[in-house]
Image: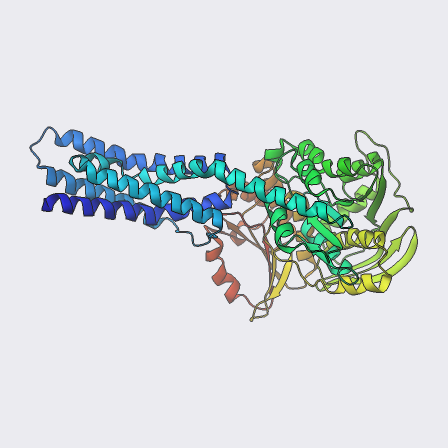
Length: 555
């Protein structure tokens, strides 16, 4: 009896150790992947496959021990030793502490705990099979969490539908509410924040917080924050596959839209750039005869503009070659070239219109912001100043100005609103360390198009030491090709490169090498945590650009 109790205690302790080491990682990955069934099942199966190595070792040991006269207690103790080795391996893996304990997560943990208690009760009843249970205990926590997830999945879908339906009913109640939908591969959040800053000077405005651009994120904003006093609702609309913008458009029914850009973002899930174009076009397709603002500096949104049957407002920049005191003018050269000879398979040379447009001239960029003249329908409007960095933010500001003019906001109010946006989190967000070193955090997301702009911002700074900290680009049509190209661009703008994580390391190396970059100035790190001492020890002659931040599901 004493031996049975001892074995039971050992079994429970081993199980709990597996749980403590493994389950937090799986729960974090689940949240990181947006509760995706496919991705979560893939993560769990990967953890089970790793555990099967130890299960196989246990089975081999039991098989070999059957040829010798070993007592059950000796076999049990040796199996425990193998299990301890497995726990040691699990404990060496990073245990995530970023889990957000939402109601959904708490339901999942409760369901898992209930299944675990039932399982341990089964072990107690079948105590003669302790050896069998101990052999397979290595992957049982993973299996139970997967079962819990799929047991709760129909309930979670029902709860999600309930909150979305509730949000739809609430929206329907406010007949006079004007809704602005903003979509695009990049620039959505920046345009939203700029619009919010300008319109809030005159109207009662609600906008989706941070990057709440999914049906549930938008529903949460509506259910928790929308009130009778709200006059304008600004909605950021994101997508990772076709049909999602169409769904969001039907959900919120915007009165006016903005398409910021079509770029090579999530092209693997969109099945190429044409898939991205079709998805972003779902917003103007929904608006039809209403007003929509288009970025004419992007060839794909220009195509949308030309095809649009409603009130299309175009936004563009008039660029001079000496606009920036940059050495390489990455973004500017592209735009100048585009302005001079825009050509596409379907279109001839395109002259930018004067009517129904907002454009900027006489642009002066610096490491502290930008100055530019804004023209509306061919007439001078204001000399604007913004504290956001980069040429792309001049364009983002113009899209916000176009929306403001649609609402009849005065020039002085527009100027006031623009001046109030000093930074946007993780989007070329400038900070100065105690040592005087500058950090440009562009870690939210990146693609080959937006990377050109952020690298051009880095080139604006006068510090002699310029360091790019990056894990490279992901979710492209071809990670190898685009990261090699990215490496070539980086080589033109910096003195040092810190490559974080292994995923794109070799491809970025290849791009840097092809450009003749001094490879002794390239350092590799396994995580951003390892880079922090270099940031903290940097002097005032250094500026860092953090370009992209791969989530933890990328190694």
